[in-house]
Image (cartoon, rainbow, N blue to C red; front, side, top):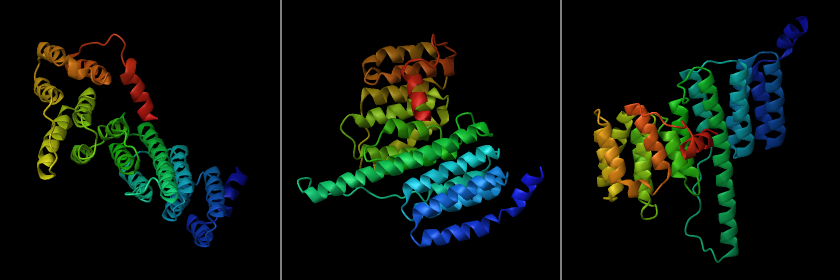
Length: 325
């Protein structure tokens, strides 16, 4: 007991420590600073001075990221979340704000455009840019997924903090060289900003391959509905229709979009027979993406109490596990 108390007293303040390590960062010795951040934060954690550990790790993650040291910054960001768990910090707005401050330091760098792919130097630049983008997305995703798990354990909604899901969706979309709209949608529907999601979808519609636009919209709506969220599903579709008019993007006029519109109307009342009729009538459109049937099974259970024979089995369950990371 005496040793533990002595250890707590002997450790200097977190402010002094961060100022000391910042000098090492300013000298460009990022590796040396990284080892100091990890070592000092471990000592504070061992002495149960968790708030000091958080201060050091937040400062370190932000500084490393500001200096383009993405791998180092992401590592400290994950250690920040681990300190939250060890210190059993409850989920609240103050902690989410601290996580957001780290998140905002992750670089946002567009991949070079209009390169001559026949030129060796341009090809090298492109490969390096794509590799760096992957490192950024992987690092930020690992950090925010860990933070989401903390939020679930310490008081947020069972799906995790909506704010953290929104951050992750936005970063994956803006920084991934090849956007996976399924991953982006997974996080947006667990967030709380359907208008931002709509804006992202409209942006995607302006540059996706033909035939991908209606799939992306339908997938987004069905994901919301599979969570029982009819309100945000309606908001999303209304907002997409509004925004395409001002952005000179054409709203798809397909059977899949007809189904989406009819489905939203049907789910507002007790109309299971009509729901089943829609599934049969638009079967060929639904079958374009196998997971749509899984979503519709989940929707039938949420809105009409239709029990699934194997809950959370099949592709829907696999996607859930994959995205949750």
